[in-house]
Structure formats: structure tokens, C-alpha cells
Length: 215
Image (cartoon, rainbow, N blue to C red; front, side):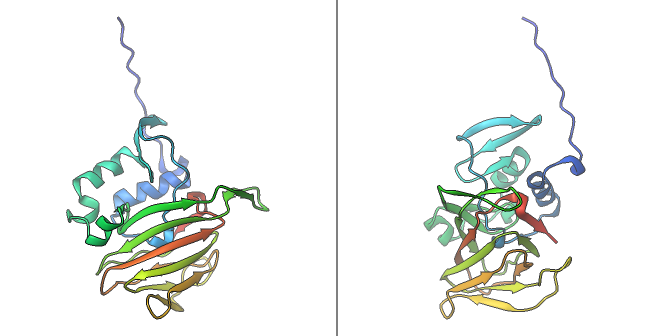
């Protein structure tokens, strides 16, 4: 029986979707991006392995990951080879591609069509754990995001809504102020934490990588 071998060519970064560009940067940069990313991915397909545009990917219950990123997680390179922190074990959190630990906990069943035609779930929710000594890069999303503190304190710095972020107001989400709002389109980053901080991030309308931008 003849076997047909198909060669796939690498897709230039300029032709990739926003979702693909995000992961391409995560692999090459190795920097931490935030919980503010809000961590909720589009509704995943069934668990398993498949291919997309000729590149192998892994499907999991919480994410849709290029195979190259999945390998980094397995080897521990994205988390410095460290074991999961106790809070990550307790809440079954997985490594975020650019630092920290997360788990999607809820996606609203209802959707909304926005004025520009985008269709999004009405809201999405994740757990996010920022370990002590870590921070995240400037980024913004096109939806309002509410930070809800559970344990520890995370400091979110806002950077305005201009073309580039400019350090400004800081929100300390923790025991003293358990809620913090980042308006849609406003730059944000998390500053280095002194201790592990566990939060939930509620995004409405729901998060989508097409609405996510790194500085």
C-alpha cells in the first residue's frame, strides 16, 4: 500500500491569528503575562490530539494548545521546573503559558452580539494564582474585567487607554479590598507579589483572544 507523505510549511507570524501570535510570542519570550489575560479560552473541542493548519496541537479540558507549548509545560520549562504550589494543587490549577497557574471555572451559556458584530458569551470566569515573586506584562482586553480576591494580595497597575501604557493607578485586590475593576480597553499589569495570591477574574462580555493585546 502506497503511503502519501504530506509536508506542511511553517506559517509566517504575520499571517497567523491573534491567538496564534500570542502563543508564538509566549514560546520565544518566556515572559509572564497576566491573569489579566483573564485566562479563559474559547470553548475547547473534545479532549484529544489533532492538527490545525498542519501543526500538531493538544486539546485539554481548559485550553487549546499548540504542541510546542504543550511540550514546554510537560518539561516544566515554563515554570522553572518547579512543582505545583500548594494552592495550585488544591484548586487543580494548570500552568499558564506565560507564568502563573489557572483554571477556567465557568463560561456563560448565553451569548451576546456586540455592535461590531463580535459574538461573545455574556461572561467568563477563571481562577488565577500568581506565585510569590512573579509579575505579568502590560496587556489589555476589550471587555470589563473584575478581579475577585480569595487569598493573599495582588497589585494590578493600570496604564490608561492610549496606544502605549503609562503607569498610573494601582488596585490592591486582597483581604482589605476584595474587588477591583479594570475597564474595557485599559492597559493593565500585575506587579511582583510578596506572597502567593489567588484571585478569580470575571470578564464580561466573555474573554476571547481576538480581544486580547500585549504591549
